[in-house]
Image (cartoon, rainbow, N blue to C red):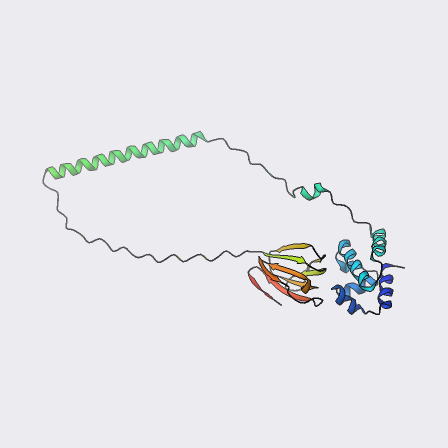
Length: 250
């Protein structure tokens, strides 16, 4: 008996409909129907398929471990992740070489400073000599006192507006098992995830997205650093519109 047939028989023996199983597991009805017909393409990958099989099996009273072993026998068991793959950087780190000082440029700057100082001394000496000569000949003109020019008032500096994060950062902490799905504002699919109770997951998007949450009452949601806590009630999926600097809307 296939995995889908075993789950369908267990559901019928438990007296449950697909809608009731969907409400208990927070898994969409289309995914449950596909699993019962042996189609796991809507699950989003082997990892999520195993999670859906386990959740549905527990809801209808089937042996989830036996069904997972059967799935692994057909599709292959998950491969272990090596520590080297986790800690190896995605791109090599380049170490900047220390540049040697440019003594030629430093010498040019020193000569420019010396030349400028010499010109200043010559001009200052010539001006002082001319002033002394004019004073001794009695030709120094008296100047009338002038009123100081009014200093224009400068407007107070306007405080700069706080910088807006160009990205939308979404963090989810699952108290209970929950699935989420992200789509573009026009409905095109982006990514789907199954978050097991007791774990957390974070996503970053460069533009506005829609977030479909299967179990909003069993999670704590944080968007752009603002904690929203429970965006809904247990077992009733909700859809939120999220974006950079954009308020959360249902």
